[in-house]
Image (cartoon, rainbow, N blue to C red; front, top):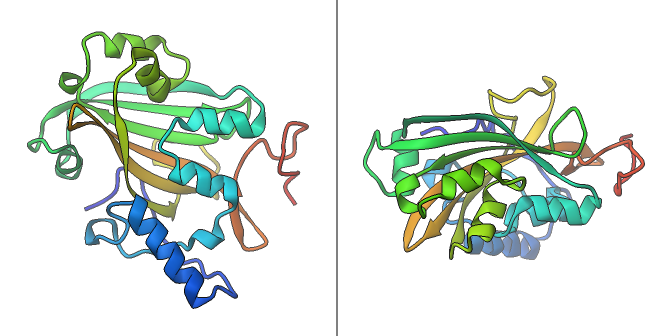
Length: 229
């Protein structure tokens, strides 16, 4: 089965990582990502030590990504709709949402950015409107902060279940330079005891000194991480 976004997985080796560190990483990942070591997602191939602290925070957060990015960059992060259409779920997506194959859903694709030509995040969501309150989709269309902000605004009790993360590329529908890399994660949002949304996020990253870090406003006055070397 293929992930919702292309992962093009590759191994990243981090030198001087002790056996104790490896065990700690595995336990942390297993505790928070339900399918990281499952066959459906492929074998683990990216050590947490290869990710800078902000990127690890983005991967492990069970809150809104836009808030984390805005707090770090001190810039407004805009969510822009690329496409929204009704479609039938794939067998893989239906399995994650605990519904029958070919169930109809709303597929929503957005970018998150802060005034840069390359977005910070590409996100594809598969939404089951029948498992959400009436009027939620209307709220989502007018909300500036995307799904997370809409859930908070509607005061929907929910939780995020993280499934897996991988090193890969932006999704095929994204407009990005050919060499752009990303860290991809898949998770679902559960409300009233049932998964209602399946979300695949791809974080634009760059590699410096053997580490992956978010591609955040690099080379601008607002870049808290410094200009790209």
